[in-house]
Image 1 (tube, rainbow, N blue to C red):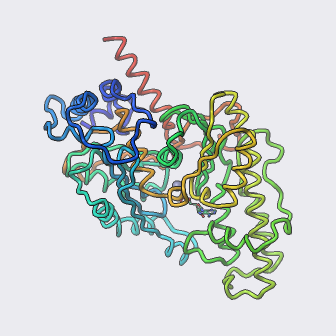
Image 2: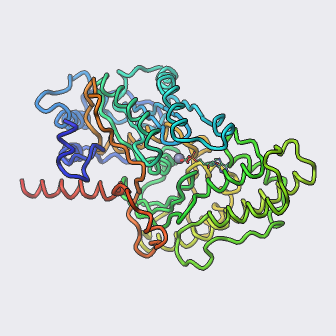
Image 3: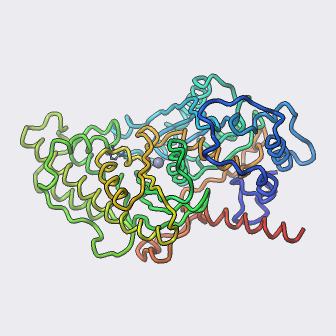
Length: 479
Ligand code: KG4
Ligand code: ZN
């Protein structure tokens, strides 16, 4: 069945985008965030919406056969329970989330020790680390939720962007669980998950809204029109802000066991943020793109000029040496965030022209757990009469909850794949998308520097969904 979907079109792939699925499921998808009740709801197998969903589900997944009636409860909105699996980067994470937003469990196994030991993790090492713990992480997530696989409505898993070898571990596990228990599967975009988890936290957050997504590998600002529909207003032309935090921490000899960002944030509290004069990047670019490679170089030169030895941990540094390091940390953080502030201000102006009714700006991704980032961006957003929505730090850094929640959002509107076979052939090619843009680039914000680096990039999530929708419409009109 999965393979048959693949032959429909090169852009409509295994990622839950079969137009037939969408067609069947859409009538019952009027669910609004406001309708989601804050407590566990009673399962009602006889409701009209349950019937619709059950029909939609069986139409696509089983052909002429149908789901046993007893399974129809799984498709009731609040009764939906989804397992989310995340392995795109350094963390192996899983969580179980209910359709009403209740987090039933959340488990994360971090590779921070490896990071601290080697100053970075090679893809092969990271893959091995994920493989070692994935079964346990998923089992723990189910146990802590007090559920078994049989209680799940679907499995959601990050399929990109990220390291291919790492993504593979999560996808393979998700397909094994889904295959063994006959569950549909939802392929999730990691950056969309960072943005949408804000809707689990803030019930008022409805589309359209803006999102600044700042992590170790990504630095994007998007306008979220609706689920799966994003315009990318800006991105980084080189490094992301998280990478600049991580390198600054490494060169300053900080403890990397909790990743570099928190270590820099903490040391910065002791420093004078105006003592080292770093230049704010891209001052002359009237767009919403970012650049952190130059700032990284400025930091490195400042560290060299002060003869700071990264091999000497900050905990053993002299008072003066520690003061120098703190000044660099604080000055770096101020300028790195100033760059975000300037670009966000412009992006909000652009976004309000495109969607004047925007009320919220989401800031998410690992770097959004930084308190200085949150308070500075809050000022910018409030000055523009918008409300800042920042998930709590534990949901800003990589986690399984955001994947489960994004899976739920797409599952409700009928975007998912049928259960994989219980035993997958050895030569099965997984649908992994290491380089996968979230939205379509806004023409005014296009960066020439970045456009040169687009080889082997997957079509964006937004373009895939649009293609599926238009195919669906064509099917409708020709019927
Ligand atoms: O989203 P995330 O957990 O993983 C990726 O998708 O990359 O983001 C990780 C990044 C790392 O670069 C880490 O140093 C940074 O987020 N980070 C922070 C803080 N906490 C995590 N950066 C600055 N301040 C923090 N408190
Ligand atoms: Zn992330």
